Length: 398
Ligand code: FEO
Image (tube, rainbow, N blue to C red):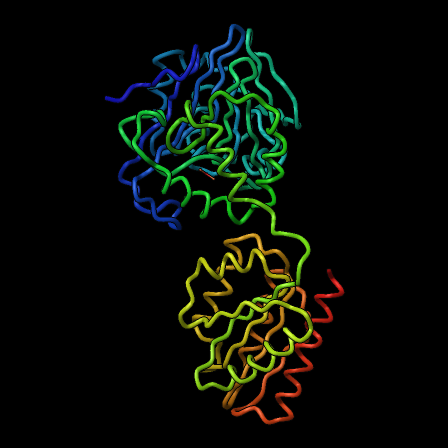
């Protein structure tokens, strides 16, 4: 039977291990399972939990808490983030002890109302608020979109311990809890950032700015190892991985093209030549054989996304939809686009891709163009003008 683990004086890990997990949230593969970390802090005045665990592990969680304090002696729970892998046991906890006060962000309270569907005592916290547990204080730091709008970091002031929920975490499960007891989980740590935090790099930068002057001795995330030796390394890694795109230099166009019979490619060649003539750097991708990560990196650097697509079976091909699906997995530098393509008989793809980009909040640098079969000299001149218009819009937005 597993037990709680001491992290510091009157601070215990009361989380659970889930080594069998293969896919997190039905979205991201987990090569080494995961943990759901919850922490019990006992002050002279208050016993407080930082987050809970996934609902199916409630009984194990309660048993670990009760190694130290009865559930009816828990005064409060800090909900750093409401996703059910951390709030899942809260409903049952409140059933056992309805007096518990829930500290959370305003967004967190809104979400909890509909996650729990019951009344509960809550206190919305603001940036920098502190609460006194008796001999030690907790400070709250709003960190929205790391990775939900509700996220807060909690900082145990005297102990210099940060509880950042999902941030600085890793889907990694072993028999050990602390980083210095585990050989290497860097690949899982980086993959986790890539899946969970990369879509919010700008928000990561905002959160890092808020904690940059905090002395941090230990980082206790909600997944994976507790960083008692490498907390600052984790924070520095996030700073490196979320660096802002460079400013200045020539604007960049990302030109992503699929061309079944060479006609969309002929259009792309003219567009590329004109974009370059207008002073843009062009990074080209053939959507049929690109590496996703190269394309994602380019999205983070590009001032304009230009997509060339044929119409196949009254639709854009799957590779084009895949490239569009990857947009929400990063923080694109800009949301300016243009779409072009060739078709044989019906020609829906350009409009369909424009509609999808509109749904993703893109603006258009030029109205989409599409031509039937082999582009004529006149069609190619329209392509040149299309590129000229794109360049003019990008230069205007610089
Ligand atoms: Fe680990 Fe966003 O939940």
